[in-house]
Amino acid sequence: MSMKTVLFILTNSATIGPNSRATGYFFPEVAHPVEVFEQAGIAVEFASPLGGTPPEDGYDANDPAQLAFRNGLAIRRMARSRKLSEVDVLDYDAIFFPGGLGPMVDIAVDPEVKRAIARAWDAGKIVSAVCHGPAAFLGVTLGDGTPLLRGRKLTSFSNEEEANYAQADVPFQLEDALRAEGAEHTSTAPWQAQVVVDGRLITGQNPASGAGMAAAVVQALTAEAA
Figure (cartoon, rainbow, N blue to C red):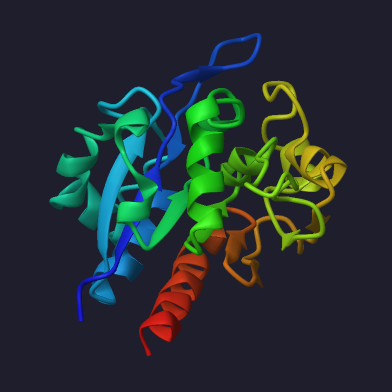
């Protein structure tokens, strides 16, 4: 049986909002899924709209998973992320969008991101995201002309969480935007873990949900291989 591989698609945006708040991908939302995937024997690769080293935010050296990722091989590969337009998502078993505020700038609107998601979904791949990562799904139209989000169950960083975190910096409320495109959005108490699985669409609400989301992707990939 060949090794399963998950493609992480990361932001290249290092600032956001009228005050140029420093941002990027949120470090634990990469480190925790990488730990889960590697422990399950699933390979990880990295892409971003522009390629190169994605900017980071929120590193905590007191978190063993983050420290291990900081000092591991995966982050070295991530520093040379491939340009998304040069990647074929059909070469992977799943795609994953980590959060952080950066995705609200580029991932939310990038046409290559939209094409990649539609191509992966239409080919039967697993599509996943955590926290602000589901911004990637906005505006995605599938091959049959239907919006990806219409009638889909998912979660993301909630309005309640954003109100106490970055409401002055983000260009829109992610929860509201997902609902406006027809998603059935649910959330739990702020900063508590929640994962929503709707077939091949797997989402986590916030940083606390990264490992659980990755575990759900592992379960889905394992079921496919059975």
